[in-house]
Image (tube, rainbow, N blue to C red; front, side):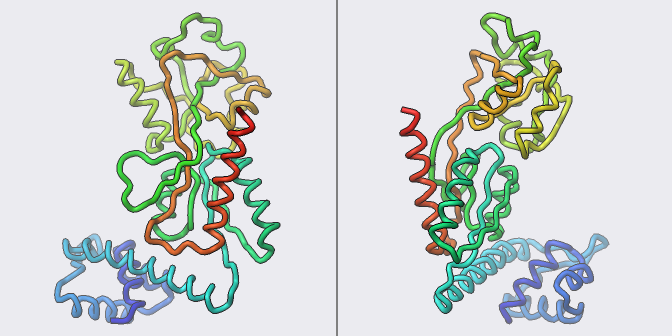
Length: 303
């Protein structure tokens, strides 16, 4: 078996179509077929079954795909490590960060590293946490800054940096603003601007409403929170939304204010995530160190 065969197998598994996989890899269909046969010959089992829906993985194929994906990522990491050892170059730092993290920490740390390491290059990706985790697991990012993921994540290492809170925000003249002892049930009839249902923030507020015996929030606008400027759409309306500590100060200067809801209790831990088995270059290790220093200094200034 050639190591490249693993990439061929992964491409066929993802597309379930030989011709599409061949086109994406710029190879011929016969070459893909031979690669699959070589692997199946080595493992002694069928990994794919042909059907009306295309090339579908067998039960053995699904197990092998998990191993093959990890081997492919490890091989790519090994090549990057050898490249650094051979040339002495610092390489490229591939960093992802969630829209809700403290961007000043991210940007100031990257600026420091640019000055300290003139040969360093950066690939920065600002996306929602779920997408960032997928890119990290696929080996497309070296590390990400995001809230602590839900559940057990044995395939990632989480290093906490700081804590923050989520706030319900509304226009200054919102009807609920003057209400004393504002509680979650008072928001049950309000309309909301929130991120999609598959995001952690959305799942948290949906779960919170259900815990209090309330229906899910009424969604008027569903959007990715890629930039604080998106909140301007709710100015002068009766819509509610959520934001983190980082965005709150800026939003209050634009005419939006947090609502003091007594039973919200939205606390989060923001940190660095990376694959525990990944090669961490000196550049990656240095920016992890810098992020830690920056957050320590940030909290020292608040004391």
